[in-house]
Image (cartoon, rainbow, N blue to C red; front, side):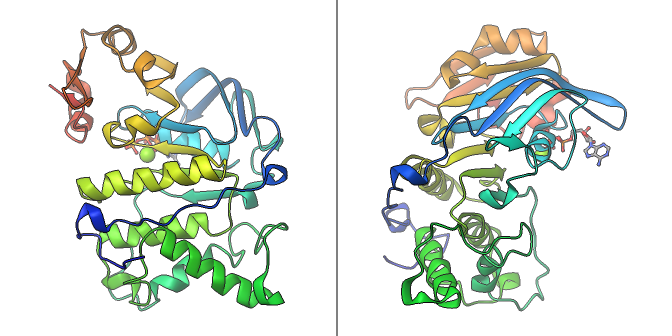
Length: 306
Ligand SMILES: Nc1ncnc2c1ncn2[C@@H]1O[C@H](COP(=O)(O)OP(=O)(O)OP(=O)(O)O)[C@@H](O)[C@H]1O
Ligand SMILES: [Mg+2]
């Protein structure tokens, strides 16, 4: 694979194929089930009555204006925040029980420019068990027979997968936001998770790289049957890959395929104000008439133009 920087052309994007996982390595049953779920923060109810089932290999986007509780949903799935009503089950047990099988990319990651730790070592942290406890999944083949070699090989593999080999040995603090982002995605992928929780992973990427990273995540999702939940502020780069949209809004939530959820009538109902959704000639969705209280949010949405 050609190593490249994030600002390179689209045709230099990572081209590695993603090896399919064997049937017996796939999770059995739903990856996530939320039943009549409700959550509060700071004494304020954010969302309620949420019913959602996510299967292995499903690609789900969580959309909605700032402050509606998208990151909070991710926290609930990680078991970091309890529901006040309803039930959440993740990978066959209570939320938080199987976090070693989850790859998590938090929102708003940044590194001090003076940080001298190499990108490669940041990726390695995903395997060192500092967060969740397990170094590698039990089924992972260990070439060479030692955990250390297996870890090194896996780090190399995911760095190549996200197209970050050209800068993986540079200090992370010196890298561009997008280069850091790719290495953090590699970190989340390193333990070969069954579930990927990505909170705005396309933030700080330019448009060609948004498309490339979205396609990469979709390939991993399909080939390895990893369920992906991606919080996004622009649905268009991921639209063609998505199975399901969870739209959270002040007036309620809607779950379905993108074409079911991102419609004028549905958004009009969720926001209580007339909203029109147009499909551009290239298939992109353009939302017109977004409510004033969400304008700050709309500015960050290419698909939500006033
Ligand atoms: N630790 C906390 N204590 C109290 N309130 C919190 C806490 N964390 C978040 N909140 C509030 O909960 C609400 C939802 O926050 P959350 O981060 O889930 O929103 P979001 O949809 O991810 O927004 P954004 O698009 O800005 O990332 C916000 O009003 C926020 O201020
Ligand atoms: Mg958030």
